[in-house]
Image (tube, rainbow, N blue to C red; front, side):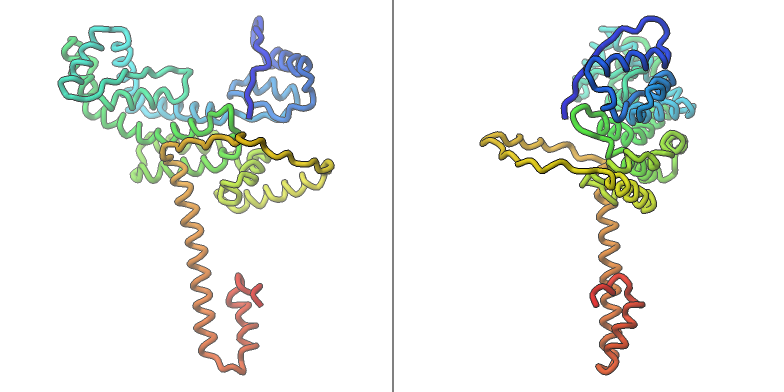
Length: 355
């Protein structure tokens, strides 16, 4: 898939929905694509939503942006994590503005024979920056504490309890980090991943936090509030159904899949296909290079495990029913085979089409 910038325009005055809609309409006319735009993806700003509504084009909120808002709001509502995160941010800011502190941190790493890594800052407008800051700090907490003491900034040091809170928060936010990276793509379509990823993030929270920390509880509530209607969006349901990685397995409930099938049938009824065109053979040596192997994904591993569990459960149920049928079969006289077979239809409904 190609991603291109069609226009960059300076909008004077207030960026109202009406003004943004007018600018977008002008871009469509310039490029001759009026009536060809099927969906507009924006952030969650009210003026952006209003602009799309005025254009009467289907709107899709950016999944990664919504997920980022979920994380930020959940941290804000969790006092212990929020305060510890802010202390961590003050420490990182200090190191970013002090060459003396950075030199002390390098020396601390040399002494402990560990790798020096620059501390990452939490930036309000950058996705995943909170997680990246926590990870970069926790990785070198001991060395940072040493450097702070050597530069007479011990008042900035984080307590053991606060470190524990940050470590737990980092583990909780890992699945959100991965989901954001997975769905932030300009070169690949990602709409099919929206529906499968939400229940996976829910499930991963339960796996990581069996005692359900306060942050995990708040995150779960925020996820439900911001994504509760994701299964009702036709464009997302169809994308998930038609993606060979997901199909039926991409839905948390069979009802959502069945509704998607009905929608697909209704949509397909009105489509007339053009005459078949001959398929051109690819030129020699034009094969695409294989995609490099990616780092093991927590969310994808969880999805594969759930799919294997479902498959194994179906196979086990089938095996039990077949064994039950065979046992009953062996206990009957041959003269009763016909009656037994007909009775087997009621006992073993999944296998009645074998008759």
